[in-house]
Length: 340
Ligand code: AMP
Ligand code: MG
Image (cartoon, rainbow, N blue to C red; front, side, top):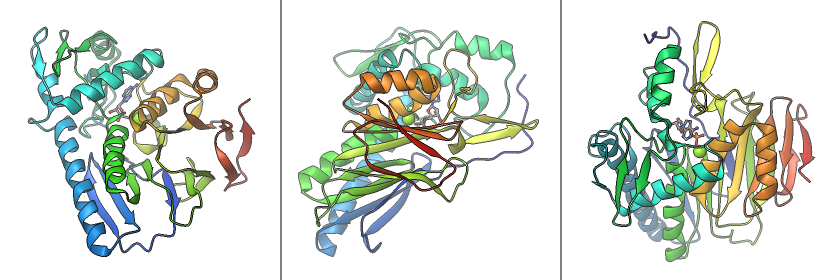
């Protein structure tokens, strides 16, 4: 029987921030995917900026409509409520993101798994009805969390086995960033997209300098742990248990579920930041590597050279891969170590 919690805390704040000399005049804020997003377009006339911001916000709303787990018209809702064993038609974007999710599931040894939805629902993270489920219910829900419980067909349809439900919460913002980057590239503009914890650095800055990115201090909502520099056309995605959680009986329960146990991952990482050209995979990896914990995540980082990583451990160590440029501490409570 699910218990209703007496105290609910939800944090959904930006995790990575950037400085880029923006005046703020050309920043559009909007709410989508249950978070506040900000779009800043540089280098053009005011009218041009407005036009590009319009294209970007339309695309955000389109993708949000497809992937919102609580919207009865969304592809995800239709999949979750669809018949097991039959072909369920979806948009090309949904077929694409599910295919990328399945690739990430394989590469993270099931630590990232969109089929974790029955467990996410039990804990109430899909709609804010938080509660601590019974072990019996967790085990029942876990029986539907199969990595191969959903398949994508070539004709933009998917097939699922009985009881399988998906959440794209761990990858959708990263995928959205990739779609928005396609637009800024086609329009030839420089832009900074802040998608609720995910950052997309679109193009290079006009003065030729690198973008500056700050990684949030997991212990201090207002502060940074470290900062680094990055070239443009990259996504920077952070996952951490502090981003969203509730408290019950003196214990904290966060939103990143270990698909092996059905409980919030007991990670020795406080946050995982992934930097790379494919925002969807950065997002999936940030969630999956948080679940893996430090040792497996470091081994994963050593083997995946096309991405860069910044890990903050529960011992306040900041571990980073060699491609992270000019990394500096913002708070001396942390130590900085390169992953060799
Ligand atoms: P993120 O903030 O990118 O780490 O994603 C967390 C969100 O992804 C949660 O709110 C859930 O909707 C979903 N999720 C939780 N655990 C997992 C997991 N192990 N694999 C995939 N998605 C997950
Ligand atoms: Mg993620």
